[in-house]
Length: 566
Image (cartoon, rainbow, N blue to C red; front, side):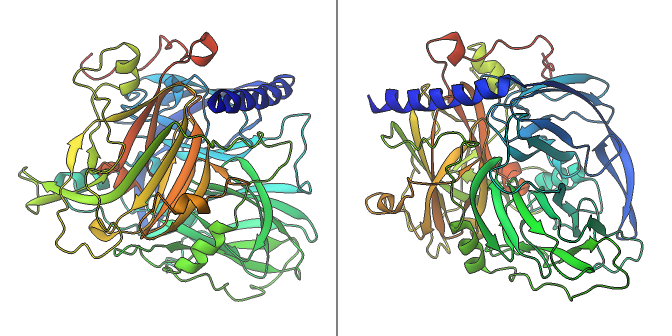
């Protein structure tokens, strides 16, 4: 009875919002030409695969409830796919984008048109390639404005500005990960970080450009911040200016002010800032955060928050950001993010009676390395519940839809770790071997699901940004140490948990999320640190069809890219 009541509540809320949006919904068309272009940074010229010759790529800007068609032309040298990060794509997994999960790659010399169906998303999302490390250069913003008959639940900004935080490598991103996987060792660290493709003034190359955001005195601006970095969480701040956080992952949150934000790869954050200081030029800056044993380069990348008619140099020195390993600053910021009860958000519907519980341990591991290119006897992999995901050569969605799963995947991903141990203790000498497999979790339509994600100290530990395709979910809890199923659920926030699509799992700790399995299809879940996802820190959730056409997967389009060898 509880499941039926909760599902009906959710359905009525979505029906209300859908009716509101459909009154003014529009259809948009974009053309993406993906090809190689040269970019010079750090006094070095690098060839990158990009969209429409730009880095970052073109911005998609639409309104809530619209539909977007994006015709992607592959003019490069290898296949890839594109994912619309945070768009739930109701009943429409065919166009979600992860390679060999919901489709096969778009091959060179061909094109494929994605249909992107928006529902209740609002604010800032993004799009990126979902093949190897190609997302490092094939990426851009996906901005969802309020519908024509909607207003913001906060003071209307005078203008908005997209801020994309990126990793910069001198070299081809795909070659970097291909070489690392072949030799069995970790991929190299980035050479720099970037803000909207600009490296700023801290790296020593006089030819590098700095991003400048032009502002007018006493005007208010909405910053749409996207962490598109490959493997680095980031602190971000503007000297002498207070940030007001108003949304995360395309859902409004209870407003709060802070001197800085912490944003993980895959996450987006909408922030208000008032140009209320003395007219001048002020640094904006970003710096990585990590609580793992292997630290990223402690580089600070700068931009300029520049008032109109400001002359001369900077008005203040560079803001002091939290230290690279400041877990207190990280946890303090995340704990302040709460849902807000505004009509522009979907009605709060946190599952209470749970039908399916999944407890997942997160680790980096090793397996034997048996090729001639291996540099060591073992190679690095990563795992969820000690299963290191192996990508098939036919996409899982096609195999599932056609009931031809043999040799492609199995439906036996473990709902608990195979062994319980002191996950966050000293694991020196502990067996780090993982098993390889393409194993999925199968959910019934409408089930109330709870997933607890437990970080472990295997392989150096640290925090993880875990992204689930096809859903926004409620972050109901997090804590330090090993999760205790008897006592920790009593600390859950079931009153106003944030509705997000990418969750920060703290190092030496855990995080819990809940959602209703009300979107039929095949949905990827993975760490948004690319090195971890490439190593196998991934799995798949399959949501079975409901009992009606409206609760079932849409038929596949006839234009799906063909899989290799078919």
